[in-house]
Length: 283
Image 1 (cartoon, rainbow, N blue to C red):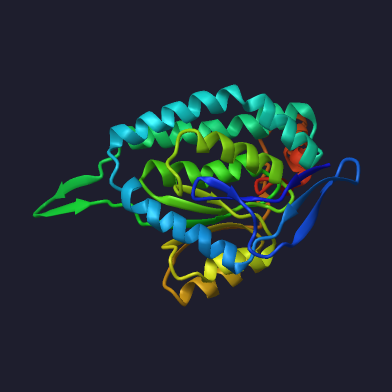
Image 2 (tube, rainbow, N blue to C red; image 1 turned 90 degrees about the vertical axis):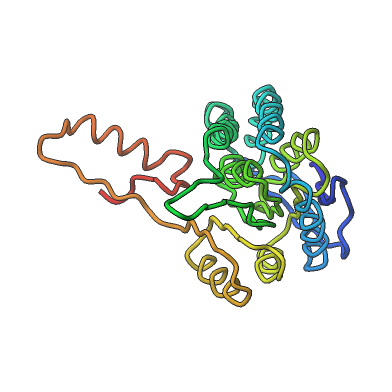
């Protein structure tokens, strides 16, 4: 059993303000895989303040400077895919082919995509008599789920970093090892405070959404969670990005190869134990 009792805030691993722990269960064995600390509103505030301070300088970095950082992250991320895959196996109970070949490997692709966009995106553009300037929005608060831990974290964090924003992340309370490994990787190349991580439960996430400083919150979770986030964020006029629970419909047309369709639908319906927003479960 491993312990994940510190939070990554302002470039350092720090103890929680108020000690409170939660067990992490490996669903494949039903055994205890680890213990995490549960962040409080005070911990969230420390992380947000660190992100706000770091934003002053990170938002002023040039495109070339951020491209160089992304290149180093991509190189190191690729090297550590096996290590991340092992952590996903332990926490999720996922088979090796899925944990390594899909779950861990997909994370680096988000950084590659963010790099390509950063390289070509027009942050300043003349439109008629107007000049449009795209600027970093500020501190971004991210809440991610357990079913695709690296994918979901990187899908939010990579574009935020590429565009000059800073981050406070509240990952799933069931995937701390994956998050810790990623935090250590990013810490090698990012200034203190650009990425901050506070583990915890629903109350931890609520504290981040309710905090006045973040300019944007992005949540992947249930419809219930999305409704609560939208309501809380409205009080401070935060921008909100929601990816909520749902199932993917499938339509099989008359001219389809029925055997091929059945095989593909059964695979995608049960892929990742069916814990997938694109699971083909309505046919």
